Amino acid sequence: MLELDLTADIQALRSTFADIQAVVDVDALKADIDRLSEEAGAPDLWDDVENAQKVTSRLSHRQAELKRVSEIEQRLDDLEVLVELAIEMDDEDSADEARRELAALKDVIGQLEVQTLLDGEYDPRSAVVTIRSGAGGDDATDFAEMLLRMYLRWAERHKYPVKVMDTSYAEGAGIKSATFEVDVPYAYGTLSVEAGTHRLARISPFGGADKRQTSFAAVEVIPVMEEAVEVEVPEGDIRVDVFRSSGPGGQSVNTTDSAVRITHLPTGLVVSMQNEKSQIQNRAAAMRVLQTRLLLLKREEEAAKKKELAGTITASWGDQMRSYFLYGQQLVKDLRTGYEVGNPAVVFDGDLDGLIAAGIRWRKRKDDND
Image (cartoon, rainbow, N blue to C red; front, side, top):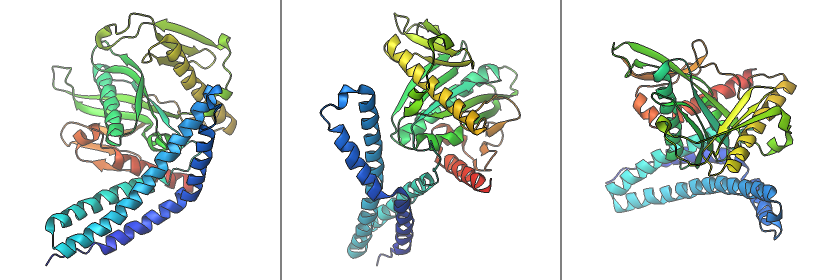
């Protein structure tokens, strides 16, 4: 006779999920979707393109959030039916399927529970992530490209839409920098714990002495902010450089000078975009990111909280937040939380959820104690 008692586990999951639903406030979420749907259905919506994009984006985000919660509730119901069926039919295959689904639901609900800790002002927004190589020569530029792939693979695992906005290739290996946008609710709150200096220690593949090489890369994460348009940027405060988009090794991928680099002269902030089809599109994307950074800088100054969001990251010794060891003891260790992963390969392949969840919990404890 098949023994399959998952009742206690399922009840525990339902209890956790009920707490999550209370925090998410499903009724308010549905009301918000109804309101936005009505706005999106207005016949004159697209008379104001900018507002229309805001409305449709917010509606899409709210619908995705409700869908995620609804799907989990349905999966819990289906799991209970599957367990009953497995017992009634004395079916070991169904029992194995039930155990796998229980493990998967524990993981999904655990991730959603962590999201409920994201209660910062900007946490619900999408995110723009910039990776820059630091000290370490070819190893550093190669490391920066490894981090780019790591985050893109993480997004791919979760089926999150990603748009690479700019990539600056190094003359040797890897990239000097890259900027990409993750367009899902709470992308900023989730990925903001990845901001800081990352350190890689390994036997360099670029040297002949088989010596250990340490290299660094900086990760900056900023929220996509609709109100960034509130920041006026006078034409006299910026310098706009136009150049030809290029790929690895400097090979031209466009026949026109469509890439744009904007320098904000008063602050020295520099934003480059080259992945849109036209110069106009690249300039608009670059201005949006620049305005966001200026708005954050302005709010930081007003609140006297420097480096709170994007911050200044030097990508060198002394301020690293995570180390990746690819020699001797294979290990990835977050120096803030103490969280470790003994298989760097899976981390570089996008398995970041444990590290991110530990970072979010660490930040919440830190904020509560401040």
